[in-house]
Length: 277
Image 1: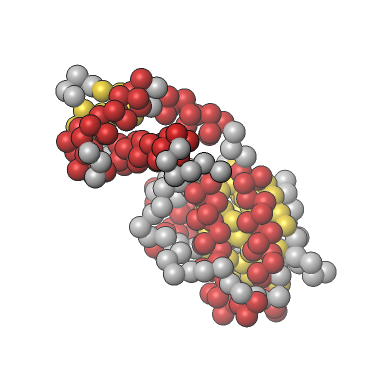
Image 2: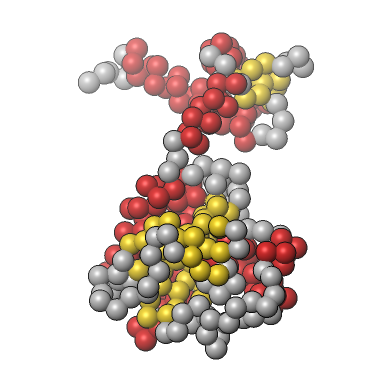
């Protein structure tokens, strides 16, 4: 093991300090001058200057004509490489299993496909009676939990344009009026999750939350669905924070920055007492 004074330990400390400088530059909406980086990092000026020189030579940062530091082309290359390797389903797999473990019910992952939800992954409930959707199947946007959170990532005008009247009535609870659905989606944006109160399939209730990519755009939705007789409205409300927590983690894996309206503050992984199984 390296001693605290060894070259390896010193290099590790320098790396941490250098990454902190990069983080300050990345978090800023403009290039930062040396004095600003010294103040933000708390590093001595000579140390900051030495690290910035190394970072610029590595093209992680670059110094512009005004003497300010911005992100360099190496960061763009790394970012694109990261994005090229992302796989939504593989990133979601363990989190979907976690939600099934918490709820005992089926978890679905879906994306926008034209004017429908396309289910791209599912982890089934261990119980014999469960919802019928499967990967590769589709459902309407206006009456499904995932559909509503996908719509919540669009503007009101985009939502209205995507929902062509007359909307299909799937159950007696289905909202079939476009302005009503638009208002409902507005509420979903504020709340951070959506519910399907037996609107798409008779006897099935669900709760869903959005998944965002590195740009902050909603790219998918994740839901927990179950027969209504064992998934009450109260169960939905109890499970909603866990669904939001999981989708927030999946969004983080896709490069999304934390959002101030995330509902995960103070939400912890539930213990056995919160399990719905």
